[in-house]
Image 1 (cartoon, one colour):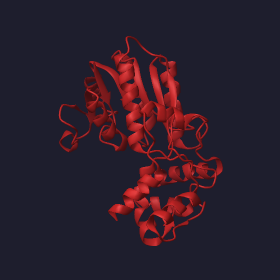
Image 2: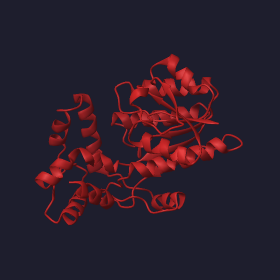
Image 3: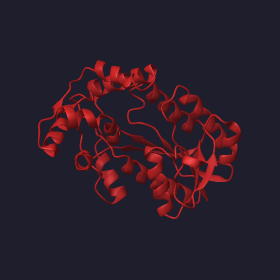
Image 4: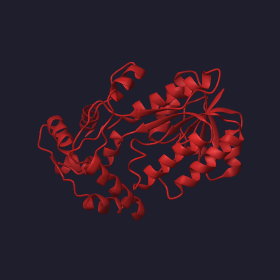
Length: 289
């Protein structure tokens, strides 16, 4: 049976495709530009995107199981609606959907509200699904390397409640396990939700301390005020998106992204290995600097 991966060239998607291929799955990847895809040999490439109905119908034809990821965009909810409707039209019943942790609580943050809507649509449309709810991506911090390394400041306003930062490789491997489990099952399986978190729940000061230790020089936390964060983001992304990221940061500060009891152990058992940690990431970054 064929597994279709949307977002196949993204941060999670590339790892996911490789994980599926290494497990012997038959993979089709939906990409906008096949010439730039750079995916492993044997992966079937379907050109298109989630707002191109003709290409979507062609990509979904003959698919048994779908990995659905809608990137943050102004039309993200429309993309989710169309993809799920076309999936049902093509007889696809098995889905792994990448949502976000606390999607049902952080409803003032647009892409959290969209993911919550996606979860409700999946439930209401009768799919059998695994809902993956990742916390903050560790590799988000690649975009602030220069500030950390050159200025000794950790500038992400994540507060003191704690954020369980997760590695994209762990997200992808769990997604692969769930896709194959559903794809190879004799029938549609019940829907379940998995929180995807890292091994440590970190504060802004705690992350700064990790960097100080890894680099061997002081790194300080830049504080909880998201104003500078929003202003910096607005220099290289649309202002509406920078504002959305600010709203998300405000929820980090007010609520945190704290895992439920048992989340870390569940993931460790599922993967059969320890989760990648933020310290691992910092060591890798420092080694390349």
